[in-house]
Image (cartoon, rainbow, N blue to C red):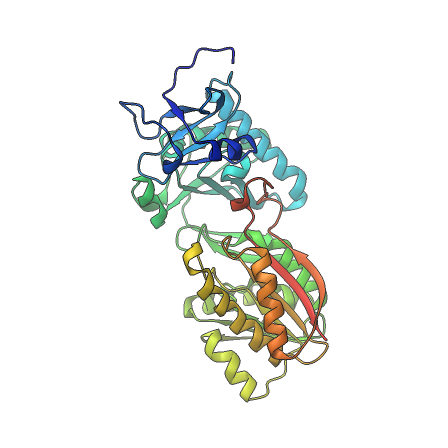
Length: 408
């Protein structure tokens, strides 16, 4: 360590020391061995081992159980504007490489996976949608947004607006207010509408960046939807939890004989129908507002015939405490779908909850298959799209499980 330290210093337990050395960026409040005086929420602070070894520098959060989010373990880093410009440049270049022609609509920054803790930036053409979930990042967002605009302009992308989707309850844990709306700055115009259009897998969607779920669209399933479209040709498909119709539209575009798109939200169903009309696919699709948990048993009684069923439910659990009940919910819909499908039918099933770990999800699927009296032939096991990168030493970045099976 060559430079003199200028930040408040924390000492941490041996347990979290190993975690940080292995690359995990979080320090929880109960893992701290001291509490320096005069701390300011969101400021940078240093982390040291019990033996005095420097382990990293990160944002302090006085309200959160995650007390420190590490930015870097380089003792010579000065965390200037250039530091954050480099991080943004790395993130942009990575997406340009792994997404290729799909760079126009992608996740541009994925929090800790891009060394930008608590920051999500999605790109919909020339509109960016931001969500800030850490106090320290919120303090420097003006600089971050300006750097984003400057770096994207180098690549020929002139940002026309940044929508802030800070309307999530987790911000309360950071002591931050909840709100949404266009970010205003001298270097940035305000778009005339919160509605924009994107194209994904050759399908056009209308995206409401202010009122749509999350940041307006679920970009992480991009290539999983493409995998469904490749085997949907000629099949009668049931898409459960369709939301705005993305899996259903991919199935229809892939040549499905007919697709039924189901969601409990009438707004979602109406949006899915509009997206189908936008793509000229309504002649092979119908739309139903219903609770999937009620619908699947009813379809079984009616002996409805489908060649393929897609299960893309919302996260049934957002904490470890409710994993058990979530597992029962996943099993219920998978069991019903397996009973409904004929031998040779196809099942696409997934979970977007980090807490429903892959081993638990696979165990649940196997249990559902046993109870349904079927066997499953694995076609593909997939994860989130590469614009949502997974750091192997940060399990929280690995959340999406997607499986394609044939029922045999």
